[in-house]
Length: 430
Image: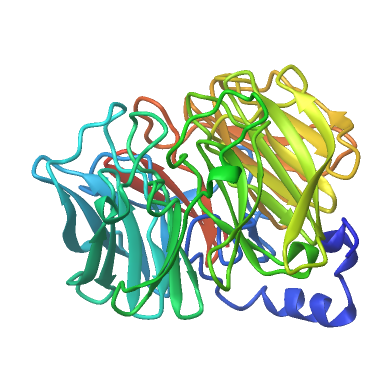
């Protein structure tokens, strides 16, 4: 399958779907959107942006301290937050910002440094799935927040690569939910989404523990899994302490691992999948790589490095990356988050890194021909999504900012959502 599948997959029927999206509401049901690619297909979003940005529709308060982003389904928004007595899931009315319900998913709240929730709920019909920072996967009723089932990662000897708490947003795929305990009895597991029963647990065989001399850590990373059909085999790709791995969806067999991208502090960004290709990056001076997945002829998959960019060229710490028309947009630098654009096929830098307005780590989202960047100090940059140059349309400050702005922005149903610790801002785009 060609590398630039996003650029090549624009037949007439796709254009028709996009044209109807002007009038249709679009949900954002999980971490990085419906397909975890961090792209909205809505259009007509930025015509009235103006020099002062969009208008604030409402600001919700009382959602708890946290770095978690939000999920949007219909007229409800879901997130998680830390309160004095718990880490909890919260449901919010998308029209008014009113809190509809709050449900504890961990007591405490858990203490892991940088206090605040991490997990973005995954919405699947009338169910929500999330991972508490102390290591429990919890399924709640989306209507009232009541618990349906939960499992403790201790069941698989759960372990983090370092001490900042589990940060995963679980993946729902068909009848299963996939999550990453990081343990010796289950590095990645697939559970029945209806009752939490184990379907399979991926473990490392003795001959899979060799890292070729690379210094890595066992345990879960701070990333979330994505689906790939690379090499003709359906698999879940996840960044863990040991690096990037591919796990066969049918039975949980570890297909391949790529240790070079691992660091021993925190492996965080969600990988980008494009056909048979996977792009991965980590911070702390590590770097980035493009891998090609091919069949090994025996039902397995091989991962071959196409190129490597060292930490001076490209490293994304935790703001995430987005692929648009063959180019990757993200923040570069450990703690700097300078906007950069890289051609995925070649690794060539199209532009950047740019010393843009604002400072610190940079998260982003793509929509309607634009990349919206959110800096750690709260600064918002609206830019045109083009590899030609860093084309800034507008720079604004949010209505509220506190501490480290790490929650990723979300665009859904013509609105921009900005989580800032205990508050959620809703801006009307159209």
